[in-house]
Length: 120
Image: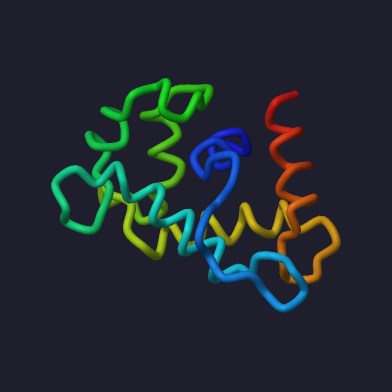
């Protein structure tokens, strides 16, 4: 799952404001990640249905594993769709794993290190 989040967020996350320390705050990370993930919401209802998730081109993320199984793990309330709360929760979990020094911001170095671990 670690590989999935890094690849879904892309090599860089453009546009979010940076925290005063020069890093990316959790809210910015969630906003950018949510925007990227919501591209899968093809019917525009504000949620990502299982069918929308699994219909995404595999090459778009290079994620390993079965997309249906991954969706089932991410759909914590088991309603058949990923909503903003579920997406924000998984991004918060990812942020915490990437924030190596636990200072509440992600530096470019921490993001790069996480990409390096995903490519291992």
